[in-house]
Length: 190
Image (cartoon, rainbow, N blue to C red):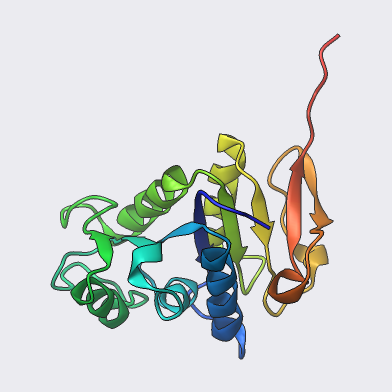
């Protein structure tokens, strides 16, 4: 899948049964292939990554403060604070300070996560309507980064378009056996 560099990992805040275990295993596979990971600060996919790999492999971009101030209902305050106290790298207020509304902070934080990636994005959405997941995917495509999606609990036929291109089954096995990759269409000018 990816064999180095920084990979952004994102996904839904509410995962279906078995979803957290799948995300955690994928994070271990990515870290084991020499990748560093960058994640956000929410329940679901972000928290699953934090529970799976050594702190030295992950960088957290957090939309709240170091004491949990400014956190929202989907924030993984406990896991992020535990990660930080174990020596993990956390950038607090990555989406802006406490004066920025939470929704805007989360969107900015998602942009910062994708901007931190050098190798690509691995996404674990639990719905074709997962707004934050698809924002991350669109930002990665705009940067020219590979986007790999493992749909959790819905048919790959419902994966939304990310612009000019299409979804193709990823040539992968194991934890990534159900993955799909976005292939952008390139317009040839004559």
